[in-house]
Length: 200
Image 1 (cartoon, rainbow, N blue to C red):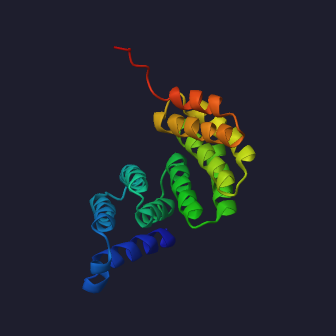
Image 2 (cartoon, rainbow, N blue to C red):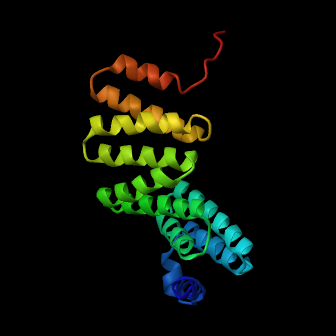
Image 3 (cartoon, rainbow, N blue to C red):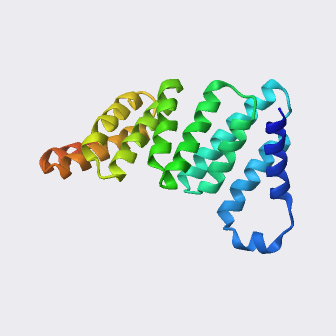
C-alpha cells in the first residue's frame, strides 16, 4: 500500500503545484486530461468499491486520452491504475495502455511482451486490441508477413465486441495484401468496411 499511496501523492502534488511556467507549456487538452484524473482521484471513496469505480474512471480517461493521442495522460492514468488495489481485468487494461505508451516510445519488444500478457489475461475486447497492436509492432519493423496473422486474429476476436478494432484489422489486412501485390483483394477488403448503398 505504501507504493500505491506514494504514486497517488506524487500525482496529486504535481497536479496541484502552481508553477505557471510549466502550465503555460502544456496544451489545453493535456491539462484537461490531468484535471479529469485528479477529479477522479479526489472523488473516490477509498473502499474496495471506491477503488473499482476509480479504476473504471481511469480506464475511461486512458481510452479517451489515447484516442486524442495524449500519451502523457494515458501513461499517468495507467500508472495510477497499476498502483491501485483493483480487479485483475482493470490491471490488464492498465497494462494494455502501458504497452501502447511503450510502443509509442519505439520499444516494440517491450510493448510486445506487455501485450502478450494482455492477450493471455484480458477479456475479448482488450485481447483483440492487444493482438492488433502486436501486429502493428511487427509492421513497424517492416515484418508485414509476421503482422498478418495478428491482424486476422484481432478481427476475429473483436467481431462481437469492438467494431473499431474490426475496422482497423480489416484495413491493415488490406495493407498487407497490397504490399504483397494482391491489390484486387486489398480493395475488396476495404470495400467490405463500408455498407453497400443502393444505386440511384
